[in-house]
Amino acid sequence: MICCLLDQALPRRQHRSIRDARRAPQNDTRSRRSGPKAAQIHARRFGVGIARPELAPQRRVLIEALALLLIGAEVLADPRPELRTGGGLTLAEMDLVDAANQSLDFHLTELAALTGARRNCSHASFLEKGQLRATPRDAGVQRILQFSDPHLLADPQGHCRGLPARRALLEGLRQALGQLEQPADLLLISGDLCQDESWGGYVRLREVLEQLDLLGRLPVALVPGNHDHPQLLRAALARHCALAPALLRLGAWRLLLLSSHRSGEVAGWVSEGQREWMLQQLQALSQPTLVVLHHPPLPIGSPALDPIALQQADQLLQPLLHCPAVKGLVFGHVHQHWFAALPRPQGGEPLPVWGCPSSLVAFEPVQPCPTGHPLWPGARLLELGDQGQIKTTLLRWPPLTSA
Image 1: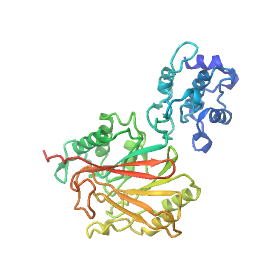
Image 2: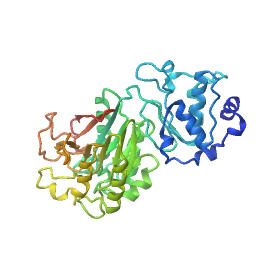
Image 3: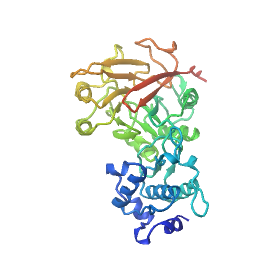
Image 4: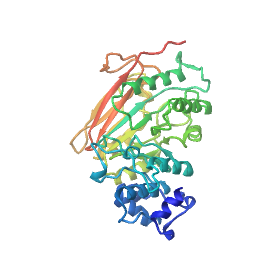
């Protein structure tokens, strides 16, 4: 079906096999553009033919979408006004058909199966090879649901701090997702994923995400904490999630994920090699950027938690404060809501920094809780505007019993 469809629109010499197309390089920034013009750039760079311009607009969009998916690029709804309404239609909602009256949705599903891609037509673009994304209706705002410190165990019935860890995460995700007025574009879990640092603990995490069908419909980004084993985490979940350290694209934003895990230590540490990599990314950044790590990069005012915060934090924090593209920083580890606005050396808008509650159990708070429930488990919604603004909403729900 796919070959026949391309045969109808493209000269045969322009075709590429699915095998060769999947080997196309993915690290060139030109492969991250979108729209018909970008599709032609993709075609020239990777040798994938695009439908002739004299074809009907719907026909061109169909072939462009298929060609982009063949090379593992992101696929976005066409921006031409005659094919959009309101904030923009997703590919599935455009209801396009080919000459044989087969819908675009049909071809995307079939091609996704052939290439091993995961198709998703309701969330923001998330650049992972082989994943298909379409523009959200509210393309100007990207919504991140941040969870932290679930402390899962290999034992599905295991308890941490007297609470059933797996059930607490499952119930917390249900509660938080139910409180959102609009769907999230990415789920972020900022460390201490697995209390016993076991393969089984990361399998439990994958099971929870699969049970809620999150891996199939929502990008997931994970940051290791002190209660983690980065190698086992990568082995269990790297095929399904983005893992720190990484620089991710989310709409107009970039997410800079950092690992502050140090083997055998409770306090945080960012290695020299990772700092050098971070500095390289910061020098090239012009898009608004949110930085994510597990340990707080400054004291929060807790005698118990400050000694186990990020060590040598200034080496990390100063470059971030000097980079105007960095618009915010979020962390976990402290099991509570926390906020500060850090002045920048060159003046201008301060850098906002947020600590995220744990979805398992709360620690004694340093600051008042905006919801009035400082000891309830919680999460945070981050809404990132396309002009670099960040709006946050603290989410809370009643704690589970120990049963």
